[in-house]
Amino acid sequence: MEKYVIIITGANSSSGIGWASAVEMAKKQPKAIYVTDIRDDQLHELAKKLQDEYKVDAIARKVDASSEDDVKAVVDEALATYGRLDVFFANAGICMLGRLHNETKADFLKTMEVNAWSVFTAIQHASAAMEKTSDTKQVSGGSIIANASIAGLRSGAGPISYSASKAAVVSLVQSSAWRLKGKNIRVNTVCPGFIATDLTTPAINALDQMDSTAIRDHNPLERFGQPIEIAATVAFLASTESSFINGQDIRIDGGLGGSYRHVP
Ligand code: NAD
Image (cartoon, rainbow, N blue to C red; front, side, top):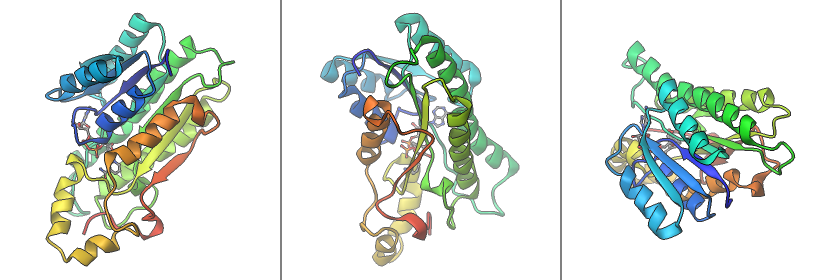
């Protein structure tokens, strides 16, 4: 990926999937990675790590992934600085642990805005930039990856707005793959199962208060996933090794599959 320019949203947390994906992609030696998040307390540390350990141009930018202006600005900056955009990993997300009767309209709309609208605006602006700068004769003219969830494929008794927003991400990606027909731009989701990160800490704490067999019941591998186990697939989807994978929802859940139950 030596000439590649990459943008990642939601990369601020050192225990998160965005951070791990930045590291995995840096190992493939791209030209530049923009690491972005609405928070930036750890973002500069990540950029320094990518620069020092992998000799990649790494740029930290505070970006609200649900703000079209912010997303457009970072895409424009990548184009102005490097003249190309190859990979956009739309990873930012939030999860409210509500149920049917205690989630408000504001909760629902906020979840949709951060989880689903962010993916829509990322696909719009990233694909426009990739189209401008990519050669359709290349093996891969660009790769957009969205972080959906197994909750978007099959909801359990879990957060209802979250599951709906992730189903929207799955649908947006499937439609976009067709809308980008002939452009040589691939669009895929990763659909993680239960991964131990800041996002899931409240739910994991709730699980810990239950009988330990409940945790085993949640997965045939009898454990939660680790961010690196998602990041490896993100780096694969970013590279030309996955050049014929398009419009797919890649389930990475340790075999949880049809028995999905998100939160106790
Ligand atoms: P995380 O909390 O480490 O990452 C989410 C990041 O998104 C945070 O850094 C947060 O600051 C950032 N963020 C929140 N709102 C934002 C906004 N408006 N603009 C930009 N950044 C924003 O947790 P994670 O588990 O690594 O989550 C990453 C993605 O993975 C999310 O989309 C999440 O839904 C998805 N996911 C996680 C799991 C899991 O079990 N952890 C499972 C399936 C999907």
